[in-house]
Length: 202
Image (cartoon, rainbow, N blue to C red; front, side, top):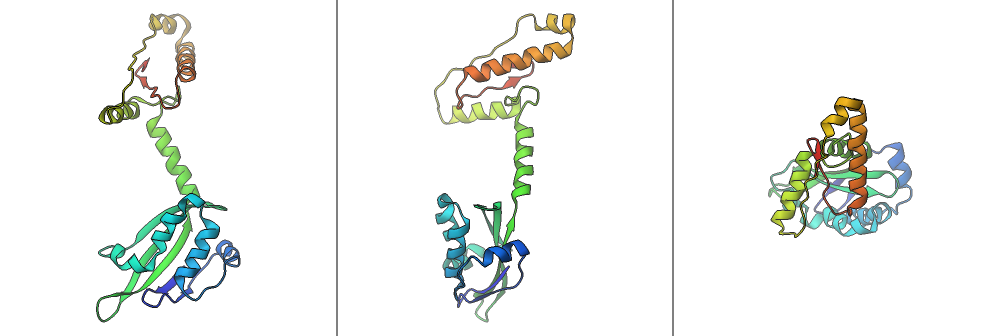
């Protein structure tokens, strides 16, 4: 955690973990926060995220971005630890009402991201087949229609499927559904939307 004078860009480190302390040893100690943060970003961030991260740590625009807010955040992927979240928190203002001090902290959110991605997967996926479920599949199709993306819509029904369940049992019926879903996935492109609509695939 860094305590920063926004007006002078001077800073000092208030708190650190053993992991971040080890990483800090890799960074050049620079008097101004802008230079220090730029050095950290270059060592931590993926190349594709550098521009966005540089914009976030820019103290010259921080007061405007923090106006009326308790904090602002930026998420990025650290080359060593995975997903991280950086945050600016206003501390106080000078006699003219200008932002004076802020706290800047970085936390690892890799486990949180994994849980979030798992929940998104569960919310969007038919767990038996691995296809989109009805809700998420219909949303994907609606989005394509709004974008006026051309394509073909196919509704597939397995004839006499009830007979399979009645004759061989539901576990065999499930295997048939899974086999049909796998065949459809192999037959379609990555950008195609394949979903399970009740007992049907679309």
